[in-house]
Image 1: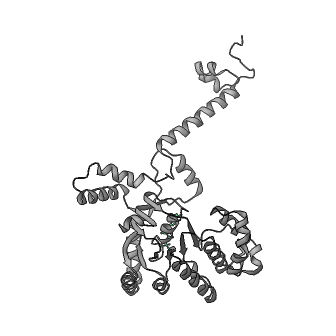
Image 2: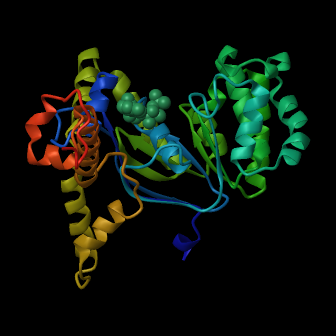
Image 3: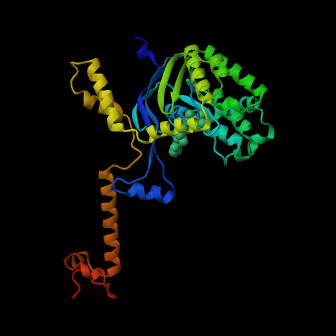
Length: 358
Ligand SMILES: Nc1ncnc2c1ncn2[C@@H]1O[C@H](COP(=O)(O)OP(=O)(O)OP(=O)(O)O)[C@@H](O)[C@H]1O
């Protein structure tokens, strides 16, 4: 029952990154038909969780475990590689590294983000003084955001996000860079949001903040969902893990992290898909067409970031046709003539040869 009323649902979500060394490598890979040798990294290896309306979910995990990747997927900034993501309502994300345009001023950013969220110019004009006053960044509001300190970016980002009044507020580490006064203002605002029954996703390294604000916590560990549940139970386990990790020698820490990262590099989406299908079949032995259902679950709502082989072949075909007509044009012969004797392309004529030219 509860499952149906969710606000956010992610199911078997993965995220793969290609680790290109240069821009040209990226471009070559885009047009390449053969499977290239660019190393891959799976930032998420199959995350499933649901968030109920009015719930504040904390995301915890060591650096690089995939918390921002997951919150960016939920907020629609980046697409997942596979899996189902259903977000019921509009989201607004506050993150240190995302959300504001560097070349625009604070005031322009306020207008842009608000317009993107569907607000009218009149509504924005009305809200503008409140947003500026909450951010408390003084004259900097008319300076380009690239001149802001990380604390100022966070202040402005947070202020815009809460004033837009989204259904789902996502806060990614944004409280860690503000000073104490601003931090308290944010906590008060988040509490206000909670009381208004809004849904919040809160990413933080501060277990104190997590324990103070979250009803439920998901621990993401090197791309996997290690544990999800009641705040106290999950933070207890996470504290045990960090305590254990801190006690390791430098070499043991390095070996542990390398081993985890290797698992993420060598993750096989095919094997994962098979595993999910086997689990689904075991849970419902009479279920028919399980593998096609799993395929739909994995790829049904995904927009591919890469060109399919078919599209690549089509692109190459179009490029070759365009090239052919360019060469025909330069050669001075007609298309029919070139088709009957392609060698004329290598020896272009000085005179224009029309089809009936005698
Ligand atoms: N654009 C990208 N290209 C390649 N790898 C990426 C990209 N973005 C993130 N990653 C990798 O994905 C992994 C997860 O990153 P993410 O930022 O989601 O982790 P995080 O848990 O939020 O980390 P932190 O606590 O340090 O903010 C990291 O190993 C990171 O290097």
